[in-house]
Image (cartoon, rainbow, N blue to C red):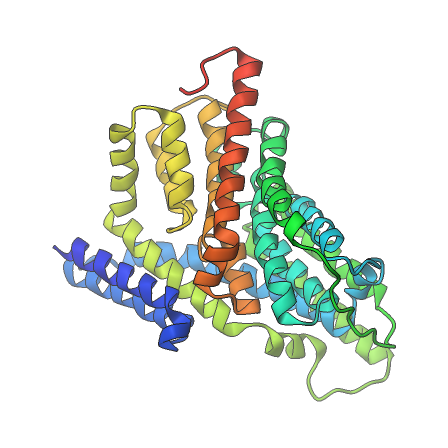
Length: 418
């Protein structure tokens, strides 16, 4: 019975988050209440819940520390006007050209960094290029699609692809070679639909006289790129590598300020910490707590098991998992699939799952980490995103999936669906 109560709390909380603007209730407050209430109900039934909660809190804390570090480094770069290294080189004011340039930059940068960090960086750059919020909302929405599509084909681009890579289900060469084109199609289809209706120029941003600090830009971006590299070399969790990068940037900016003989009451890193979007981090916390409660109860595993029995065609199972990842966290869904199936490395199921779980979250604004981050930074509304971007993301998701299945069929001479 308590499982039903947890589901009801989760659904009600989800509904209030969706209706944030009509109800005038901040989504962070709703998410925190939802997450804690779900665990409260679980605690009443399961007295020995502390170890499970500690396990999930450790995972959640890692994500939040990673997010905190990435956002602070981005704000540090912004404090020194470092993003002008990029924005000064983008001369066009054409909406179409800007959209293509920024989308492709996001797509490939997500594969090198990760989709969450890239979404934060690119949203900051977007603010510099398009100061008018109403003009940049569509850009921001499509950057979510680009970040998720770009992260799906890289072993370090999306957390679910990383899980499959670390778990030995996929290899680097295979995942890049087999998912690059489908992921590119996933982005290209929404762009091709939007571009004909996306004419005109944007109002050019007012250029400041302050010279861009190239050293801070390259050190900041380099420190972000070092995170997946350090993770691969040392095995340290990503948040530890991100904290190392933040500590490095903190030290560098302190030295720069000292050499400039400028004494600020607040050090640069502290000022950057004041500028980050704390409500978005708390929103993350609430959402992840709520989803972890569903996972602790076993509902997500039950869902995956039911899908396996109810849907005989595995490709359809993967497609449904991708769609579900727009509603609930894709991490426990992929983890459940890893425990249920025993396919060999680089099997079609694992590759297709990496694509679906990585790109399906773009369909809803709260369906992926980049979406939640951009939602907080740009204050995008749920229904606005669903109306303007969600259906485009769905078209791209299905087109990329179809592309993968066709390529696999032609290369391996097997039936279209298995």
